[in-house]
Length: 395
Ligand code: APR
Ligand code: PHB
Image (tube, rainbow, N blue to C red):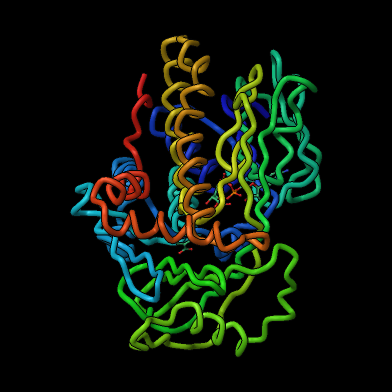
């Protein structure tokens, strides 16, 4: 088999890249471990930044997003048992859209298949070869046949646990890695949201987040220990802890309860692999970087990477220009590090570390109060939250 761009992984990064390339007439093949059903059910992130929304619309993926996505003009920082609203739209002129990652994935899979795109689901034993000059990928297809896929370029969009990054030669890259001393227990509940906007709650009992997926489905998170066992969290304990952490001073916040449809624990990590290219292998999305979810940046960074990569590949294939590919890594990493700093700041400001002392807590409260009372501080937070412009993308 031969294609121009062999893409490993059918998450938002891999699928979106394949879609963008198709729009400029560049063929690609996407290889994915999981089944289509699995990818379309998996509950992941849910916040689209303003530039991500614009890009999805611009490339023909706005139809369901514009009818089912929930535009949010602001969110609450809840601390001192009061709400302090960050008016995103007033501060920046922009807003975010709440739309589940698996909905983006559904839209992308549908669009790729409708355009005759080649998506190979349920492949196994993916191996990368000759990444310096004439790259190819070995894999076992859904039917059990061993295949070779030769390409001009390989793209590792296989997430944090993928194999692509490990195909770099030893010493050709460095990793920056930071693990946080807590995790998130997330639930999806069949119940209307208890508040019209997201609530990021800082309390002495730890962090909690109120989010949503639709007018009938709520998404909620609790800070828990990094090694926490889900078995220790029966439904009643989850709801009681959410109520405790989301309570307001006047007692006038009622958390609506409902059947829990999905639950899981996610570790909190910051990770960057540099550079994002070696030879003919390019990394995109979680394969190259992870952010803790507090800043809601993960999916947005994945989409930003591939918008840069698609434009660079177009310049390469249509005009034989290498320079945009040459600067792919450094241009992406500027945005990646901005998101790393923002996500780390949000995480550190809102969680209670097991080692936190009263001094640390006062610093957190002071920062939260500053954001709540200073237009300059709130604007800085809002500008990062709604997403900085996708500059440096087009050659
Ligand atoms: N071969 C083929 N596919 C693989 C392999 C492999 N060896 N390893 C992993 N994959 C697949 C995974 O099954 C997954 O579907 O690669 C895909 C990677 O997708 P994501 O993890 O969604 O990563 P990405 O597309 O970069 O999107 C980043 O995902 O983790 C969230 O919060 C994060 O929202 C962000 C988004
Ligand atoms: C979500 O809805 O899943 C969500 C929202 C905001 C975050 C993280 C996750 O910061």
